[in-house]
Image (spheres, helix red, strand yellow):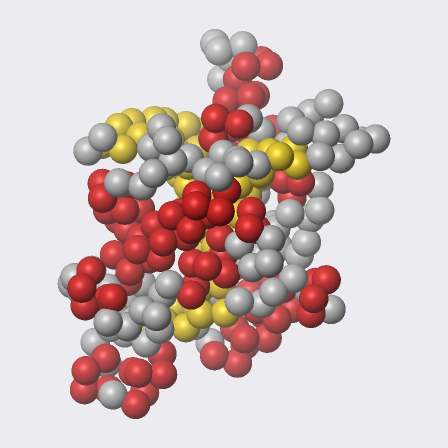
Length: 275
């Protein structure tokens, strides 16, 4: 049975393992490096051949290793902030909508909702206090819930909000699925290709991308589950201390977003605006 994974880095490694390390994958470029103690791996899918080989839409996918034990470090927060700033390319006078996908009632699926709850929201402040906030991005956030509790696809809700508020960028945060346990809660993937929620566990929903939303979309994801079942007996597994890991990773992503969007603010200044 084919291993399902949302991680481009892992899919690339699995392809190389099956084809042989000396075989070059057409339509895909990959590189890896370590900077300031943080391990990075970048996969760029260039064309339809690469899309078919890795089962993911073309675009840039960069993976950052949080740490060996899954505990974030200041260096990882800084690296994530720089990567998000680069991918978003957000001007100080532009606007950003952050979407936290997932189900807050299910811990492995709560990364998105917990992340948006830790953000500084400035869209309304830029309107009410323009003298203070006019020179920084207008950040808004949305937690659309899941189909089972709202009766609506998350993509339908987000598309309506995008049409109403007209953000310049959309940043989507979601939990992902890994193919192997050594990546569970230990890596973060950032991509400019958008995201198809649930694809890694065989429950694909409507895609979030520039094509579907009409604005550039950057997706951030953390693998919190692994598919360990069969067609006859579906099974997802996760870490035994998933509660603590999800809280730490959500805080890390929130901090990375703050570094990217408010680079001149200190942690103390940000804390004044976060509940």
